[in-house]
Image 1 (cartoon, each protein chain N blue to C red):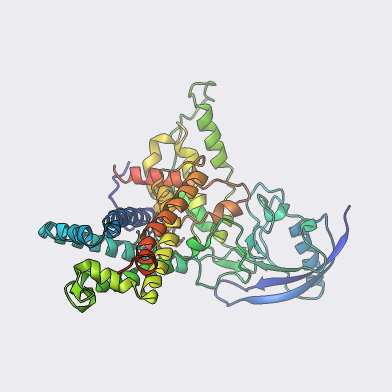
Image 2: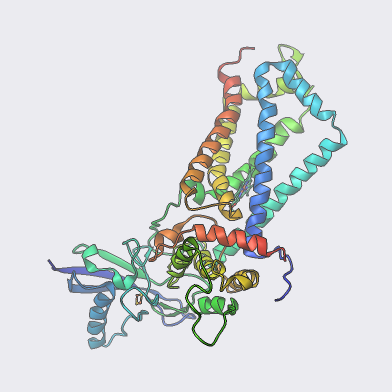
Length: 226
Length: 250
Ligand code: HEM
Ligand code: FES
């Protein structure tokens, strides 16, 4: 029997790398959500939470770079998979009649597009809140800087800004609808008895993520009085 | 009751894998609805031959849905519109009078066109070869029950062994992935005591060969299961994923 070397370029290993990094990104999405929901408690708890994170100092930096690396790996591996897939199918235009019989859904078809959109969104999002000056003009409410809280509230008081975020969360929802279900299949923690259950649960999970995240900009725009 | 219908066929014609290929339109008149799809093509080919036109090439052998030789994409679906059916077992009663039928070969980089609708699926043979041997005692027929197999396992192995290797999964997969085929072929041996000793090498080598042949990567869209004439379940793919993951650590 020959000795097998761990080969990262093999198709299944590549997919499992995408799945693992996807799972890591999902955990980030959950942690990030938990922190963001402090906004419903008002300026003080929200800003305190943000300051609390800052106090981790070097560890926060390391975590951020690790997350960035995970992101890069996810994107690089996915790009390689998609390019191979298009080649294997002989280009984008394959059959004269496009008439699939299976359960292929919109979420499934759009995976590379929702993914790319999420990437673009992420850059805008970092520019919006992470790299912005949280004591500057954009953080002022009634002539007083309210720090990160002020920054977020002022941004979402603009309906276009608010709805762009909601659209981005819809993309995340579509991506996770297929992504979560896919994770189980790609990792082989799957059984035909549970296929439908896993599909339903991953839809519910994705929908809940979307609702929870979107509640923040929608709350700021339509409910919060300043 | 059988009746006669007239059809218009739009058929992919291609000399070989090097030439570009294009659609040609043919009339199929007075087709008996009790005919199979391949018999309908036979009728058209007889007429084409008389008219000095090259007959349409297509693969076939048993014509009873067990050999896996036939197969084309009919109106965008591998083996045509009926679930769990090979092209040879698809009957013309599933079409209506005056219908346009678009017939294309299974398209994938790993399935180069030989001629018209006939494609070269020897990549599947090479995947099977790469799986290697299984360990059994040769010589006299073994005693019954000398090698006990659990009922559940033998059922699962039989389910996987239903695969006739026709390639519809590749044709239907948007990525031209061969995962349903490979998973069925790997699994029906991996789960039995006769095939278990070589589980790891078989799993790794067949996946390696699959990649080498230029098939795509599964993105869990499950079009393969819907197109499979033997309705092989995608849970085999999950099992292959799992066994490949474990086989990586040897
Ligand atoms: C930033 C750009 C992103 C791109 C371009 C992208 C693209 C993709 C694509 C094309 C797939 C399908 C891979 C396949 O099935 O072959 C995929 C899978 C996945 N993505 Fe993303 N994605 C991105 C971001 C994210 C984010 C932010 C998350 C999580 C919050 C995520 C989670 C997942 C998960 C869980 C999967 C399933 C893996 C599997 O197939 O098992 N992705 N991604
Ligand atoms: S010709 Fe044998 S399965 Fe169709």
